[in-house]
Image (cartoon, rainbow, N blue to C red; front, side):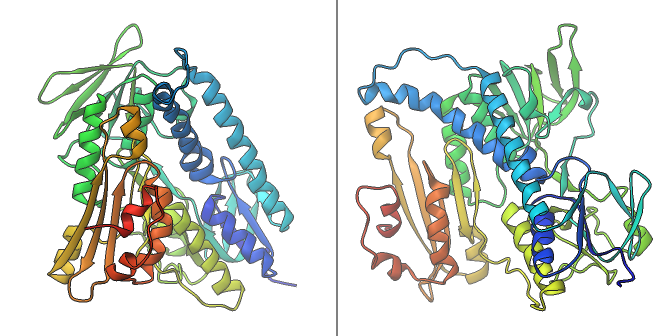
Amino acid sequence: MSEFDFDLFVIGAGSGGVRASRVAAAHGAKVAVAEEYRVGGTCVIRGCVPKKLLIYGAHFAEDLKDARRFGWNVPECGFEWTTLRDNVLADVDRLEGLYTNTLNSHKVEVIAERATITGPHGVKLASGREVTAKTILVATGAWPLIPDVEGAEHGITSNEVFHLDACPKRIVIVGGGYIANEFAGIFHQFGSHVTMVNRGSDLLRGYDAQIRDRLLQISMTKGINFRFNARMERIEKNEDGTLCVRFKDGDPVAADVVLFATGRKPLTDGLGLETAGVELDDKGAIRVDDYSQTSCESIYAVGDVTDRLQLTPIAIREGHAFADTVFGNNKRKVDYSCVPSAVFSHPPLAGVGMTEAQAKNHYGTVKVYTSDFRPMKNVLAGRDERSLYKMVVDATTNKVVGLHMIGPDAPEILQAAAIAVKAGLTKQDFDDTVALHPSMAEELVLLK
């Protein structure tokens, strides 16, 4: 018999924790996973999945208008937030059941309690039960940051936004990252008056500047308001329940909802990591090596709690690689180079590899190819909105080192194109590929 209760104890049943649990169990390990909220984690329960369903719902606003130009006799349509909200939450329930069934089918013990670490091999549950494990994996993810401003308690985060009782007539979204821009597009399409408040001067830092500028231009044309370099002073709640956001400079903004989208913090507080000597960085993230091992030999960490790349597919890969390394006799690590990402704004944007600025800093000399075009659907619909595709090439080798785009279906197109960038193909390889006509994606092989 083992001297431990479990071979592996996982804290957190999000994307990384579920994958690690399942794969480790498939390798023959005795596994338990503790989750204090709901199985599925941020992505499934309060992130990517419900947000994408809201985005699908938001797209119908323009599609219904455009349909008239395509010959459809579409009457004036009203939108019911509660119908979409309830259907989205029901699908979240369905997915949580599937994730739980996956763990059960692999004989992973699912413990619906908060768990904290008591030592290199010890875990204590909220019920008071104490267990031991040869290996402990921390996969608790991250949590929304709330600005230190007077009246912040009157605001909400992306955790609560899916549960609103009604669609706000006026919403202030604080932040300039992907969550802020995505919900700005969503609520604007639902008919809300949207004001984005950003303490800096840039949106979506990390994405290519030309693509970011195009999104800003389109968003402003649609009617989304922006307040840059805005320093919030306080949020006041009026007697009628409405809110007033006041700034150190500039006029106040009235709102029904204030949504904080100001970043996410690794969720390590109160986990007891110090009892095992697990080191954290200055952001509170768990320090790990290339194989997700912490400063304590028996404790590992994957996903957003490590703050390497806060992306669901990365957490899944880290969890899988950990399980293969520790329990599958297959030592391997995750390749973080050339990871594609997307912002499901309105319209969406996506990118892979280096931005133009990054490539210039790295290679010195680069070639940039672009296609700035009006999608065929927009032409007939009478919309002036233009798409932009951009390719960044190392001038010395002709290798494509970055690909960035904004426009309808950009994330769907980029996923396939990212394979070519990851494989190190050249601009000539793209040029040698026959265009698939008529499509937006054909612009990738016609860039000039």
